Amino acid sequence: MISLEVCANSVNSALAAQEGGAIRVELCGNLQAGGTTPSPGQITIARKLLNIQLYVLIRPRDSDFLYNDIEFETMLADVKYCIDAGCDGIVTGILKADGSVDKERCTQLVQLAKKAGLGVTFHRAFDMCANQFQAMEDIIEIGFDRILTSGGRSTAIEGARTINDLVKKAAGRITIVAGSGITEINVSHLILFTGVKEIHSTALTRVKSDMQYINDHIVMGSNYGDEYAFDRTNVERVRNILKKANGK
Picture (spheres, rainbow, N blue to C red):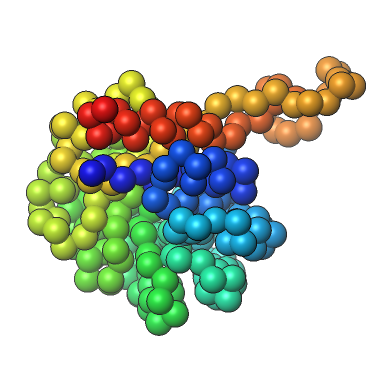
């Protein structure tokens, strides 16, 4: 059986993931920026309402994965909050300026989480490493449970060959999870080409606002777009991705 983890941008998306059959949620905020740590409120309510595993993204800002001391202190504080909130795990990653894994800081995060019984995933900072195969060995040594990767490319389909190589070289020592751009259309081919047993998707659809009054003379964010629509995980998309992944 192929398992699906859903990257959820809200509690509502997390609940849709659960209803659709996902085994785990990676809860995050600011998905349009690649994801950052969600608010305490989102974490608390998600934990209250979810029966499936709840993992939380620990990423203090967008852009790269090279963090200063204040940002790292923030990450430690966020992990402690997740522990207190009863989360099942965290998703994180820190790199050095040369593109290698920051083993010292990652070890601190992993040990803090695992001491409290939480699982730990190394996220797609892995795809920004200078040498992914060396990075995998470092990540295994640190004690991460899984690596989320698109094979160093923008989408998992583009990086399928590398993902397959990673699965082979991992040899069961760590779980390789394929993610980025996975849909109902390409998931069966991706699994065939890579040999992964876990996949990661947002399964989003665009939802129109119920607002009746529309002010079409204003843009609220830095990106131009529809201020009266938002993305949310779709239950049927989750179900369909799982069906296709498992050859149904």
